[in-house]
Length: 495
Ligand code: NDP
Image (cartoon, rainbow, N blue to C red; front, side):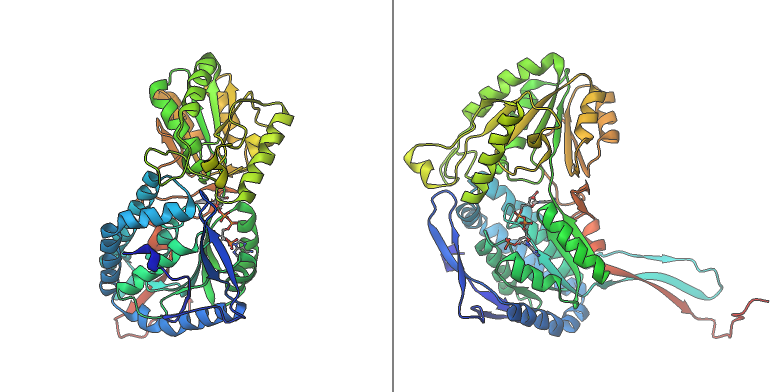
């Protein structure tokens, strides 16, 4: 696959086209170089309406297509991803900025998702149950939900859409997909892959443009029966508000401020590289980033010494360069947000041990780079310990005991991922039981989802789960079916 062939177009009912407006577009840039990658059509409300019309027209045919036949298309998509994984990873790095190795891991996760979900075409299990009455048969069947609005963020622009599109499609739904405006090209590639695999026209429709216009138009159309959204908690609140007014189904995957506890008995040789990765991979732009590290007092000084040394050694640069581990932030606005939080952290009294600034060299001045930044002496009431900064900034705190560390971990509005480094099985199980999060790790950082396990958060980190066995639950409605084969009139009234 030649990624330069990806055309920035809307895809509505199988037709590839520009915006129906005056041809308005918006620019997408490489965050490592500032280079213009493409001008993307800015869809109008009418374009979104046309996309929903197309999804509606395709629904009957697609939902009546046998699920194993639907699966064949997913298998083909999976095979194409596998074959083109290097080109896809390159395209992802160029548009999103993450290091090539991370892009490759994301592409492989997309492949895993598609293949895992394709197998549902021959499963999608439900159950048969006994009846209270003789000669009656009871069972539960699954039906597709209908037309699904899929709205996704830019930080995992390949795998997150596939987490949603693959199960929606295997279950017989039709889709209107709006990707993040920072990463529409790799998103369009997904749509192209499905088309090349033979997905009928109108099953997967693609509209690009700002959330305030395109996202809102999807959200406010009553024909859309479910919204599957990943993004910021603030946007999630807005989406939940509209969905609740319409009593509509939803899955919301939102922000995080994920704690890593480092117990005094932790193996630091294992914990240091893992916490560095949790904090700084994808430049800290992960919902699961380990952005709060809570270290037990006896090893605090040693941990800081090694962690800072590790942060200093990180190779920050253009993600396409060999050996680079951390790429740029996604936009200048994202970098300015990080800068503002670094100022706030200093004002609040936390101490910067490393980072806290831009790079001055020629190459990195072209992109939105920022130094991995380590705050020590943070306390949990500080904004840098509570707000999702979504950048390479970590707040490190001291705890008096494991119980105290768990308390600190839980004092947050978020509850996505959490981790503990310890060799004590009691501390491990205590933290798994007590930390309020949808995902828990022991001796692994806060990142590293596997597609066959459910993913998602509690508290303000989200509503519902994705992947795992839940994927099919999300995109189907269960219908209870009662079949009376007695051929008798039953006594329906009591007494
Ligand atoms: P945003 O919430 O800003 O945007 C997410 C998507 O929603 C984009 O496509 C955006 O469009 C769209 N959108 C924005 N406003 C509206 C609206 N009013 N109605 C409908 N759609 C709208 O998040 P980001 O893209 O900045 O992504 C980063 C966030 O995503 C972080 O908070 C991160 O934690 C979270 N995230 C959560 C994950 C999880 O699984 N829990 C995983 C990955 C990320 P546009 O791009 O045009 O603004």
